[in-house]
Length: 157
Image 1 (spheres, rainbow, N blue to C red):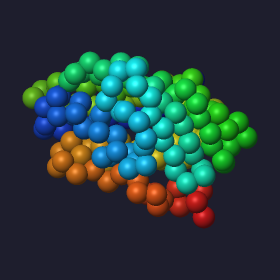
Image 2: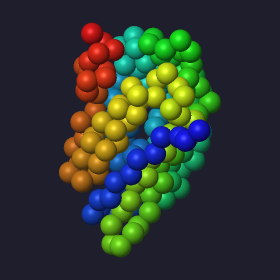
Image 3: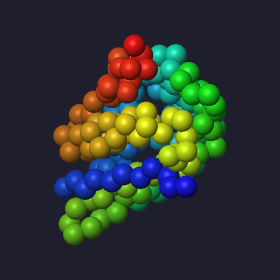
């Protein structure tokens, strides 16, 4: 079982990447409630009545790593509404060849999950597009409540 992983490189510093990752409202969703930049803190995410989750910030190592643990999850579109519950989301930051690499891994998000296609499409949109833009330009493209990609459009339809 292989967990979902994606990565990108940017010219900005590891510290800039770390700061942007912790600005979750700036790249994932403006509807997030709770602290996203405090170890031990929890925050809630929701997208319409399609996806809700509660996440604990497990680890923060400035310029190096951010780890989240999904405490609770609800999907309206899967037989097992709790597929993310108990999974771990890791942002590993490293400096390589004068550039900063951000490696995102959602441990436990595996192809066997019914949500896998929708979730990997979502993460690709928010990580490779919005988070990367936030790091590079200071402006991400977070969800404002409307579908951001074809998968979200189909689920919201």
